[in-house]
Image 1 (cartoon, rainbow over the protein chains, first blue to last red):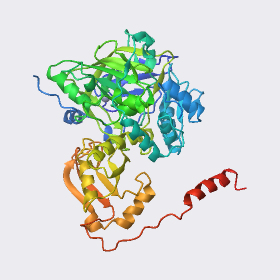
Image 2 (cartoon, rainbow over the protein chains, first blue to last red):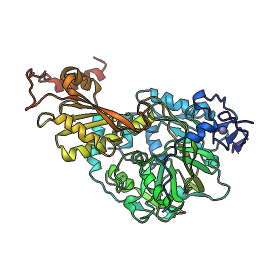
Image 3 (cartoon, helix red, strand yellow):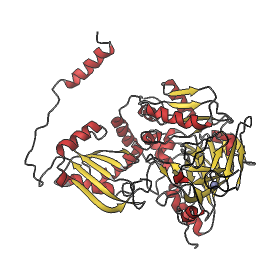
Image 4 (cartoon, each protein chain N blue to C red):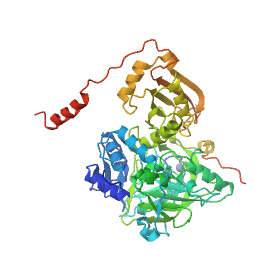
Length: 67
Length: 479
Ligand SMILES: [Zn+2]
């Protein structure tokens, strides 16, 4: 399975439904996108992620220097 | 006056009794049903809360749109549900002045939120019916938590304990991302901890007394405690709180449905977002903080409460309406007693209408300057409209009348460049910077010349009598 957002193959099952195994939720360990097996996922082009985009992301809040 | 609800459950019972809660008994899918119903409920003028009793794959009920109408808002305050917004504003102002009302600390066995404890194999999905709120959200978000943290260098200082609402992205069964913007109180606590490379203890409380949720999203001072404000807004009745199980310096509302305890991992930032935000558009992905959950306590048969955010108005706009207006009004009123009311309910105070009497020429504009220098107004407020004291700022038709008949654009419209802006406002470029617009729609007073002074049209003498009489006849069906 690949991540619909960043195309990483580093995807695992995050959780299975507590009742009836009704669905599974998947997690991309690279970009932390998650989705349910029952969803029809279409990521808008604007929100697709690449290594460059991830590297360029802002950090909120900034990490302060150590005392 | 009806009773002020002490916890979410009793409030839901009140809403149901008042016809402001809809129960959905049939099984629904997490997506897209829950969010869609949140949008739909907000599309009604007097939208009800929506309680889903059965969500496919989950054990827990979920409720949305609890704050999502002026009727529900009035009931939260223990007022009749048809109380006009202006009167709700006035009542909030009256109770606000009772601050501080210290909370009552109850023992663990008196706190319903401690009825059940989970310490092993933590799985948020066991107790929360998590779901995607907007289509392009990066995952399942918790949008209505009251998050408790304390000053890391002064942990025993109750006044510096903070209860705030921050967006939370579920990133694993026991791990969530949290947004702490630099100007939020939680960011102050976090920086203290991160400078020492220490985890920051945190309690995420869910399914709260609606006034706790209301205060958690109210902008107040760093050394003002939200719990003491809840007591004031409960008309002087202290809020019951209880010590966190893991951290002796953190206190949570005793009646919360669910409490997640854990810590913010120091100096860690991970991809978070996008998330559909209150300005009605998505905020993109950034690297943000992560919380490890180590303990869950919850009431028996807990109810998960969450809110939908969309293009205004949706539930969040009702939640952040008067709780933005009241603190701004109080700050203005302190220095300018002529100010009558502040309506800051447009996109969390990005748009504000101030009603004031003008003591001398230029007064209205100066009141706007003061608003733009308040702690909340400085980053958030961008469009400030000032109207005379006889104009109701909660009545947009009246405000438009003031603009159309009082404003001389060449002198009454001012733009101030290069000021702070709200980063989530998509017109803030670069994010965090903005210009400010002031529209002074007040009538000129000396020494400003007013060469075309007018006489206002006053209601005929028996208007009040006829309002009552017509209502009477109307209720009888015109007979
Ligand atoms: Zn990914």
